[in-house]
Length: 422
Ligand SMILES: Nc1ncnc2c1ncn2[C@@H]1O[C@H](COP(=O)(O)OP(=O)(O)OP(=O)(O)O)[C@@H](O)[C@H]1O
Ligand SMILES: [Mg+2]
Image (cartoon, rainbow, N blue to C red; front, side, top):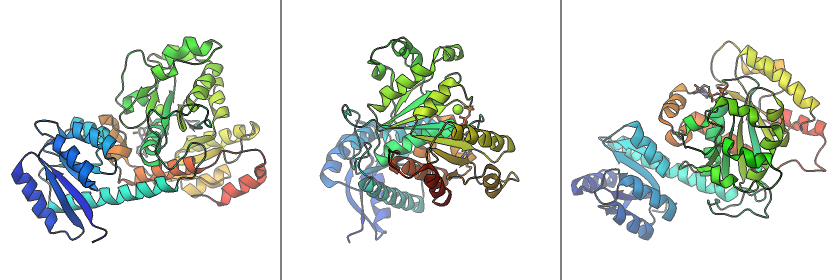
């Protein structure tokens, strides 16, 4: 049958392998193409059989499931891993997801859980492949996902997306982190996330990062000098979620040392080596934030269904207008759009005089679960609506071409953005 899902089973216990093969034997759309007793054998067989899905046990004697998954992600990227473990602990989940597993099943699981996980992962992978295949060319958005060692020297500068919100606590960091991960893992963008919440940056917490001497603070002497920002790569951390990260200074007082010119030079340097630079901005509208918003191609402006947030958005939109930002540059993102706080989206739109461009659902369970485990929810709960909303937003941002001279007038663009939304 053409559309059968080809599955490779990996478990060191022969009875488990047989049991899983028998369970899957009842399904007409699933075919077990092989079984391996170790991580090493799994990699060999996967390279030969090119399965769609690999059911991987986490604890195996020679090479554990996590190391095998890491190698598989690099060597047979078309094979999606479903990890199986008797331990449901956060650390196992985190390490599996960061190694590249697409799903995590805690043993014992039912046959329904098993087959529905396999089908979901398979469908999602197929969607992902077709999305990558239809990415428009230009602005570094090629059909092939970029690799760590890709050289962009001489290419077009990458796109800068500032995640801003004129009120604190609206979900900027949550969106910035997950948007970056979605763009990197699903859209093949070489992505750098910058924590420009210089005083109290939270990106490190969300990504479980706490390195010594690797932050914007270490770059400052070079940023203040006039020459090239040569050592920026030394301070950018490669995170196993598929993105690169430049963290905020470790202590709040250092934030004052970052001038608008330094922030600008830092982001300009990063866009030369990345397709996408996502910047988690401060909520205060100071000179440094302004410098970042100025150079950004897109400003994702976040708001929530709260009266204070709406008031601040209105003021910000006035400022953006005075600054001459193109109507397409500022995109309104309503976070927790479905929370019933007595204010409706239509009321918000009426109050600010324009439509909301993107919405993200409220999902405290996925978001807080991910936060407490240091894994972006986009990886740990890829099926959730909140992840799908983030991916839709990432696709819109990446797919939009930067404004170039000779494009429709500002008024025309404004008109378009009022009616061509969502
Ligand atoms: N879509 C969502 N559903 C449920 N909870 C959310 C959602 N988005 C954000 N949150 C929660 O809201 C809180 C604030 O989010 P976050 O820290 O991302 O906001 P912020 O704008 O970066 O805040 P700060 O001003 O502190 O930098 C967090 O507890 C986060 O888990
Ligand atoms: Mg924040």
